[in-house]
Amino acid sequence: MTTLHLHAPLVGRAAAEGRTLAGYLLLPRPKDLVKALIVPLTFTLGALVEGGVDADRVGVALLVWAALELLVYQARYQWNDVRGFEADQRHPDGAARGRLPGPVERGRQHKAVSTAVAVLRIALTGLLALAVPTVATLLLLLTVGVFAIAAVYEALRSAATGRCSEVPCPLSPPLVGLWVFVGAGYALRGMTGLALATDLTGEPAAAAVAALAMWSLGVVFVTARWTLEAMPFATLVDRRVSWACRAEQAREHTLGLVRWVAREADPRDLGAPDEPAHWRALHGRTPLTAPWNVAILLSGACAALAGHLLTGGDAGAVVLLAGAAGALAVVLAERRRLEASVGAAAALVVVQAALGTPAPVVASVPWLVVLLAHASFTSQCTADLGHPLHRLSR
Image (cartoon, rainbow, N blue to C red; front, side, top):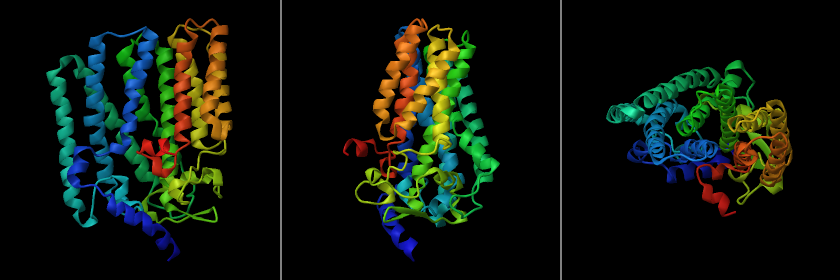
């Protein structure tokens, strides 16, 4: 009875914020549009490396970006929501999460309609490719890439979830594999923007390192976000945290991550009202073995090296170590990660200049972007997800 009582406000809020089927079909995942920033961001980084781009290249990038985010990826999200419909209906946050609307009794009809609209989105992508031959090959490769990654993701998630009510659930190869693999889509997005701005065919090492930096940053983003998405299953009593979940809710991929979360909430990280949805659980120090910490060390090292290589540097080992050391300093800075990121970036510029990197400031920008993103991810609470104005108003 206690768990039901504590979750009741969430259920009531979910019902109040539920989406219509038409609104969902128009834009399935509005809260995920933050990911749409990746392509223009890496395009801008590529343009900085190139010293600028012409209007034609910008036009192509805008067209590809719109097709990727509004057609291909929204169709991919619809596939995910169709597969997870029943589990989503059992989620304590319910309709407030913005997934394919219920009720569960109309699941068959709603899944059929959503599948049809997803197929229509892919068909529109094909028509766009036919209408603009200059982007046809790229759109085809991106569509295949997105759904190939999605197929592996769905297989891993099916193997990793829906079997355990223990919190945190035991680690298993499919679960750990899922946490590692979730970065693949971010590598695809990031490399798309970079490739649209600069020719990477002559820089295979730089391209590989940049892809690994983006993949790792994707792991940071998703594992941090999934940890916060576990909060509806938490109860806070005198700041002590307890968890409750049923196996059929299939949340092992989120609740498995809470093993790296404090068992008692620090009052500095609690908001008003004092409930799990307003707890910034990752704002303080978390174990270095947590997936988001391991991944940011790798991403920071690779981002520093990628910037160094793309600007013509040749002292890779030193920059790699400097990038990792700066990332570690930011992780250990706890609630001052924004300031630590700026300070460590300035130190990296000095290192790059001392090594003779042709453009030390530009070469350090990818590292700064990655660490600022990490600072943002780890300063959020569940109520902030998809609502950036919440944090600005604090």
